[in-house]
Amino acid sequence: MNQENNENLMNKIVSLCKRRGFVYPASEIYGGFANTFDYGPMGVELKNNIKSEWWKRFVTSREDIIGLDSAIIQNPKTWEASGHLSSFSDPLVECKKCHSRFRQDQIKETRNKKSSFAEATEDRQIQNNNDQNRIPDQVGDDGQKCKNGGEHEWTEAKDFNLMFKTFVGPTQEKDSVAYLRPETAQGIFSNFKNVIQSNRIKIPFGIAQIGKAFRNEITPGNFTFRTLEFEQAEIEYFIEPNKEKSATEYNKWISEAKKFFLDLGVKKENLSIREHEKDELSHYSMGTSDIEYNFPFGVSELAGIAQRSDYDLFQHQKYSGQDLQYREEGKEPYIPYVVEPSFGIDRAMLAFLVDAYDESDGSDGRERGEVTLRLNPKIAPIKVAVFPLMKKEGLPEIAKKIYKDLIDADLASFYDESGSIGRRYRRQDEIGTPWCITVDFDSLKDDTVTLRDRDTMKQERVKINEIVSSIKYHV
Image (cartoon, rainbow, N blue to C red; front, top):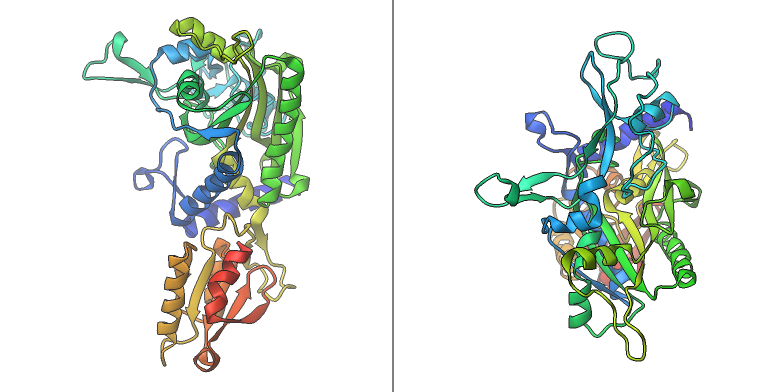
């Protein structure tokens, strides 16, 4: 797909998301705000379903992983220990003429005609580039001309810390400074001792968390791919301090992460695994790989798996003065190694939307240009829609009773009696509803309804008293 078609596809997805209630620009009545987004009725259901599937797969269905929900605002010493206060930064450059500011690596990528989000480094990476103070090459004719005319005139690069600073209490003093967490992982590490003491769990085991993180990105963009606030799903998997065991567990998690996306509908040809080169590894990492996805704007990270060694627990033990060693009968106390699978929920949702988006060419029984979201039923916002064929002769009453039965069975459902049946089908196709039920005049005679499949458009008669079990079986 060429660049023009990719941009067109992305524009269509953004338009669909707003029109059908998946994603809205935040604060839109005030002109929006700095690449922040609100998730609408369909979006919040889709996002919650993705998180629910992640949690079921990696937490509730396993004996070796337990959950946690740590605070967004932690003691500032947390970020001192982790290294975020001193080195969680990007090199920032500013044009002397128009005063526009850019991340230095974004300028380089634009120069090379790459997506500004096809990062060569892990999103979570804390780094100090040796050449970060070098002035970048001026940008050519590829969309980054100076607004005041001619070429940009860059300042030298300066470090720009990505954490959002705030103050706790009524005064804005040095002692009241705090930060919104830039990642969820550190709340897991700081609770390692609590979890060990309060749960009968032994190494190897993992602690999982889904939650918001915040980064003061210099160049956010590409819809929900890179935003100021975002949701992470992370696991810190603790093992014995052994490099061979770490490598084995690392490879397992790469496979598990990829399988998660494949099982929920991401196309295999759009996924790839990229192992980081030694010179781009984070200071804590013994090995990192990204699960990457071919977005319309370029290949970028969906999930990252890192061998974090004992770095984080060692740092927190050092800065807190607390003993964070793991004790096991018959063995010397030790600080465990960690393998970390980290998923971006907002990015995952965007990838699922991209792969599910299907515009008919007119050969499948739909009108040319009609849109179907072929979402996996497990994550579809609405599982089934219920329609009475007409608003008379008792059809709405039967349809509403079926709708209530579906809701009572914890199946997200939608009732619609407005417009033609064809139009109602199309509305549900656009939001990814896998099945539609139509109550017609035959329903009055034989207690059956028409069940229509979104993807095949095939229709079959189903007994009313078998609807709930049939839908549950397929979901």
